[in-house]
Image (cartoon, rainbow, N blue to C red; front, top):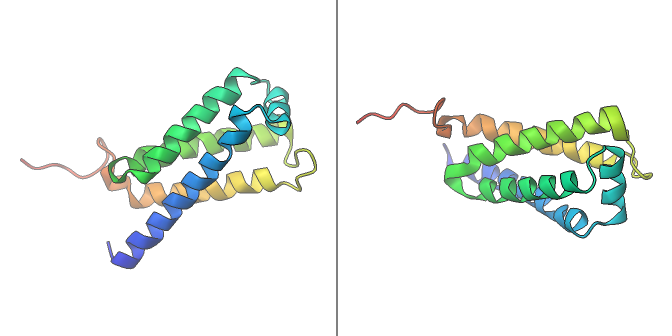
Length: 132
């Protein structure tokens, strides 16, 4: 992998981690918007806290080179869940946000898919064959 590609992927990984981690203050402080979303999704309060913890773990795993694949995979699962909740229970627009949360979930999903594609060789079962 070229140096430029490595830098771009590092930037993407950091961007995903920032997106995930910056939402934690809303989830962990029981911000009214977060409580509203998770209540509408039928996941308040335990789902809000558990999802926040998983997002924190995914954000950390994305920064550690050997666990990028796992952080990306977790992020993909989280974003698929968020997108499905938007489409089925809470709506694309939440509290007059003009769909920003939904769009952010789509962008985060896309970035995580790109990241997982480039780090697929690191997945233990699917990745590189180790020779002894």
